[in-house]
Length: 341
Image 1: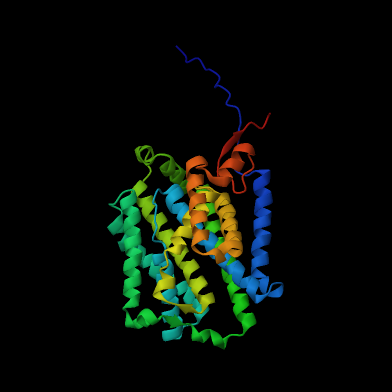
Image 2: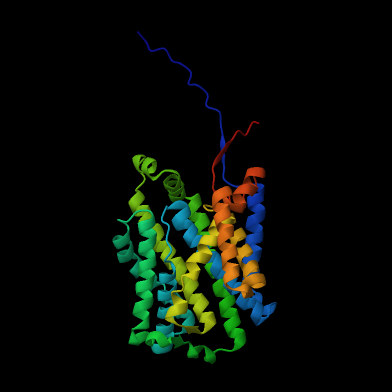
């Protein structure tokens, strides 16, 4: 008896949409912004360059914290440990060993990358608030070590005197290029990561780590890699920031303010989104410029604002915007589109 052939069911063709009109506009503006940052010495004053450098550092540190807490589920309050470690490494390499300071920026990133491995192996067994407290303890240990280490001039701190060998224009050019490169690596790298298959795994971990593990996602390995990457990103911000300051001390290098700033930016702007980091960074930067002179009162207001957002708008400002308008700046979702509709 011969087999009776049958026609296979026709499967309608679909397209996977990964970009949106708003995303294309935002990408164009982002490229123009990076070009503008790199060209700052030719259109901006030294004061403006320093202000933009500070804003870029806020964005970079906040985005690294956003990757940790918003996707990997690792709430750290001690990322300043890696900022200070990288900053001190830059000063030692450039001032003590005579390495070109701009090359030392990238060499200093080896320090947070190496330190992050044993630190994570030590802390990963802790869960929830215990992990957060552990990261803060590590940062304090780093501060106390720097305060008593002769190599870094102990508590007296270090000055980057070698920068006097470069003219003000050369320093401005270098700082501008480093700012643009830092945002390209932290924001651009995060966007590329979230659009990759690793990004799908991170989103699954964010939603439910147990369910993600049951579907084959190596949660422990991915969290480890994100922790190391975030340490390097914070280290880059620290090296650039303290190079611009020309001086570093244990108190400034390992200042918990950086963790507070990152938490405020991400919580107010919107956790788990690059757009939220940009919005929150601008809000903090403007508020710091306008109201920073009020000291303790200013920080109380920021704290209350963070608390109110956490209670009544947990998705942050960007979450409220995205509920009303579906126009992501950095789309990471995959949508099926019927080409015949």
